[in-house]
Image 1 (cartoon, rainbow, N blue to C red):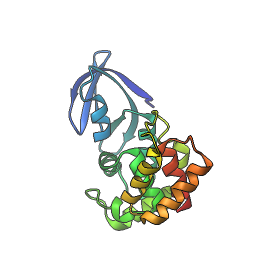
Image 2 (image 1 turned 90 degrees about the vertical axis):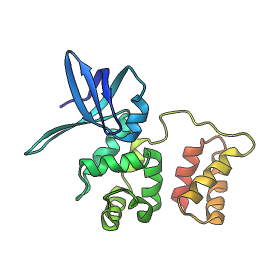
Image 3 (image 1 turned 60 degrees about the horizontal axis):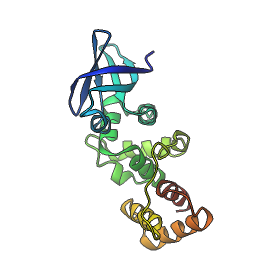
Image 4 (image 1 turned 180 degrees about the vertical axis):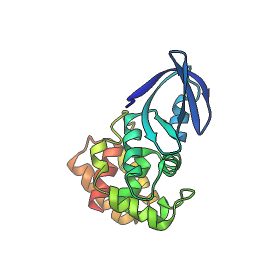
Length: 195
């Protein structure tokens, strides 16, 4: 029903924002990712997901379309509601979440408050093939360090995701050989497919 709400930031907190437009203040539930994007802004444009329940009508706001689509994918998983999805997006950025789901790291995903291991595994199974269509990581330019910095950054990201350093290095070097001008995010994404 609503695509986005654009207006003056009347109030903002880590869990919600009030955007005033046309004399009406809209209360939107937001993630920490969105909070950090609009925290000091005088005006904001938030992409909206509207939920109608028997007992409430809720607006969820997101600073990017990618975050909103990721939220929609998360709530499509049985057992994941709006608040849980918002908590996941507050804990991990869209890029980090994509890496966790692509690598199947349910243990890392269950670190989200209120999320159990079985639900984390269900999220990974249900969403593992759906995230590639979102274009996560294509929103901003990547900044790579000179002299092989792309290789090192990608390698560190994979190691942080729980992959063995030797296997990760082999995958990263293979990707860089094939696509020498690829940004770090793309190298990590392609290397995840090889691991």
